[in-house]
Length: 90
Image (cartoon, rainbow, N blue to C red; front, side, top):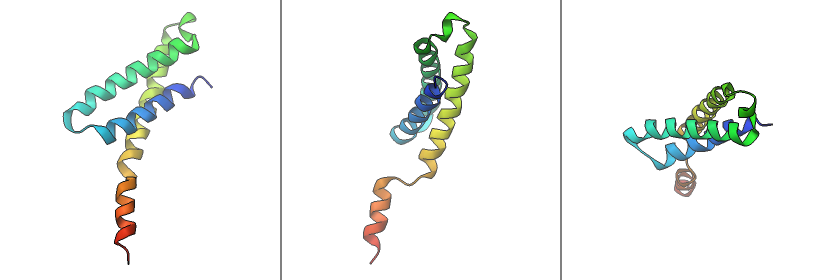
C-alpha cells in the first residue's frame, strides 16, 4: 500500500503542472514535485529507518506517476472544451 502513495502524488502533480503552468517552468516544477513526493512517501512510511535507498525507489515511482499524470492531462480533453463541443451540436 505504501508503494501507491508516491505514484498518486506524482500523478496529481503531473495533472496540476500540465493544467496550471506553461513553458519552461514545467521542468523545474516536475523535478521538485518528484523529489518532494518521493521523499515524503519514504518519510511517512518509515522506510528510511531501514535504508535511505528507499528514497530512490520512491522517487522512481513518483516519476512514473508524474509521466502518467502529464500524459493523462495532455491527452484528455478538458471539461470546458467538452461542454463547448456539446453546446455547439444542434
